[in-house]
Amino acid sequence: MSDFVPIQSDLNEKPDARGDSGPSVYIRTYGCQMNVSDSQTIESLLADAGYRFADSLDEADVALINTCAVREHAETRALGQLADLSRLKKTKPHAVIGILGCVAQARKREILDAMPFVDLVVGPDAYRKLPALLEERMISPPGSPGLLETVLLREELYDDIVPRHRGGVTAFVTVMRGCDKFCSFCIVPRTRGRERSRPLPSILREVEALVSQGVRDVMLLGQNVDSYRWEGRTFADCLSEVAGIDGLARVRYMTSHPSDISERLLDVMAGNPKICPYLHLPIQAGSDRVLELMNRPYTRAQYLKLVEAARVRLPQIALSTDIIVGFPSETEEDFRQTLDVVREVEYDTAFTFKYSVRPGTKAERLEDDVPEAAKVERLERLIAIQQEISRRRNLAQVGRQTEILIEHEAPKDAGMWTGRTPDYRPAVISKNGERIGDLLPVRLTELVGFTFRAERL
Ligand code: SF4
Picture 1 (cartoon, rainbow, N blue to C red):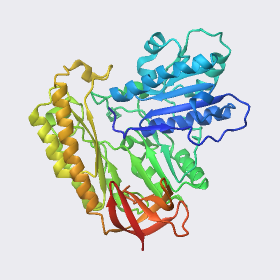
Picture 2: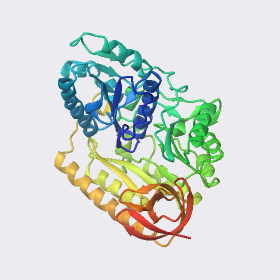
Picture 3: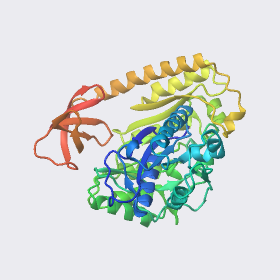
Picture 4: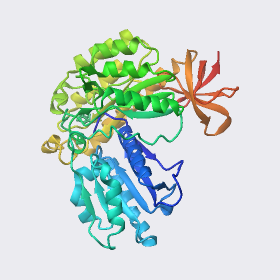
């Protein structure tokens, strides 16, 4: 389980093939924003090698699944999809099937042994080798054993590769890779390696290039952005310099670690209106005893102090978190302490998970002794409480004056725009001559589900 918001993405939705003669590739991405960003880096590498992008599996010569090992559910889904891909081989015996990302890194040879139709297994630090591996595979006789490339490279940052931007006004920019935290439940340090930060000038160059392509809102990504260090500069410096780029309307980031986030970072956020008042601050558990077992080096009291420090500086800040229920030995009393934190902090959003053992983690050595029924029941209670809080906090926004960044046309109504407030709440508004990427002063007038209706001011 990493401190990241889980998503699933089909990066082939809007193919923009370079040329029409090279082999076509289809990439499906599971997991966090970092995986989406990695897939864009892979696309850039493959486009330079002459590949086209297919918008469906059936059209593809190469199918790549970028996997997530953070939760059992995500891993099972990715591997299920992979098993599904074996049908591609039936219609196209020369098609190449590859598994990338954290599951590739964590399961390595096990995948090749269990799924002989898989041609490539490539870990997160070996993507530069993909074009050569694909080429080698394409000329191998059918039935050759799959290729494995999962070396972890401390220095790999893909810093010289501009990820392929697929249009739109929002973009992810990776500022650091890896993690040194070794939370006991999390496989990320073993699949993505140790922390390393990108040079600040190259981050700024990438954001400037994105802005020149019409991007207005960037999310800076790192497993633990607060550990960013480059030539004495910290993440607060990085954030501040990115926010200074002309033409960029908004910058946000993900993810912070409660032990590392600095008051200076909060000050920088408070002092710059381009930096969104949004903070994803995973607590994982409300009991100090469980936090210690999780190797999360903060207490509940320290966490609450941090929340207070953020709210004093940024009263409008939206807070989200990650919570695991049913960690080994979690008692009803431990769980109640988690609920107490949720009620006290009143998060805008919480990403909640049932604990599942991740092979290769330290927690694997602990007995997974919370019965499944108790995990389910605790998760349901937690979700019910959080939903009520989220709804209440959203309703309190009705009537508020704010500003939305217009992101795209509303999916079901060509007469409406969809945008987001600075604190990341979705809102729709009728069109009136604006363009995508405009910032529009509005009043939020109504809440429908989780989306606001807005009127221009
Ligand atoms: S801080 Fe690192 S080890 Fe801990 S959950 Fe996040 S990615 Fe995993």
